[in-house]
Length: 473
Image (tube, rainbow, N blue to C red):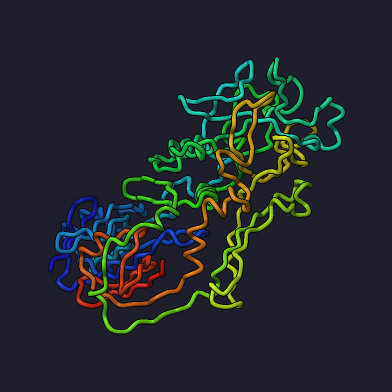
């Protein structure tokens, strides 16, 4: 049995009795946070080689630089863990302690905790004649859909001969000279700007989907007299991680972070739940188990509405929550709800025009301090007499309910998983190959049933069982 720990591709000197506790968490089962897997290495000996690899971290003269290392844990030739590592402590007498993990809290580097409105997300020139869509490097960046909002200027609209329409448009002549002109950003373009700034690579079928690639993130900030479109003026004051977590809920995405390669993949989660089991762990099981019920097996998908829009004061029926119906298939009437709050909502619409009644953000009448919540729409292009964005496109909707709603289109398989959910805490005698092949998006098979692995806890070398928490698929 051979353990090899490589830092930036170079093997460390290890003691004969090295023990490496490993905690691996499924990142796809929680919607408010994404847990970090981790491996702590408490007893790396002090040696000339290790000194050089860790850049003499034990020396006070080395200062306080905190280096991030590419860490590979290899057992008998199989890669059982790959992440980022930091020297937790350094002692010339006792050696080094190393903390390795997915490092999601630092994935976006110095931009991790900065709100989007304070990031340099670039600018685009403002054309003299405003088009319905502004492109950047061949990609749709901003559009200007017409939205009915009589209250944009508050009680001062009459002073400006305001028509009541944001991005007012006439079929013969295009956008009118009067009224606010508000650029609305394509979600795909925003994600690409974030990737360019932070140095990550984006991929995934969410970005290439013919409908979801037309998703818009709205705002109320008018261009006023600006001669260019500054991207960070038209995005919410949210951090990048918060935006991703909220965006994830709407089409029910899996977010796959590769902290070593600096890659982020956005794919649809529902289709992964129908995957076949790739490994059978039945013969690896040790005697005994603990089975835990899930008491909250009914979904409650709930919009958190923008209180600044008077149309949303009394929650409209179309904006209502989606709740899994109770019934005998859930095993009784005492089954509780698990609430998933959606902070990205959408608009009510009338005659194919989104509508709102709230104060906008503009230099006019000192309205720059007004705060509003972002919402989602799909871009349709120019339909009839005006540029159109609506809560539904190609039978995919942004309301929670209805045959084309979020619950029906993006959460049905997750809801079924929740209905049948229970947990099994079980010991397995795993090998290095089992960990090397582990894919948290794919179920394992055990004793006639398929399970997603929620958590694995154990220790290298592989001389005793690993304790696993399984979720019935």
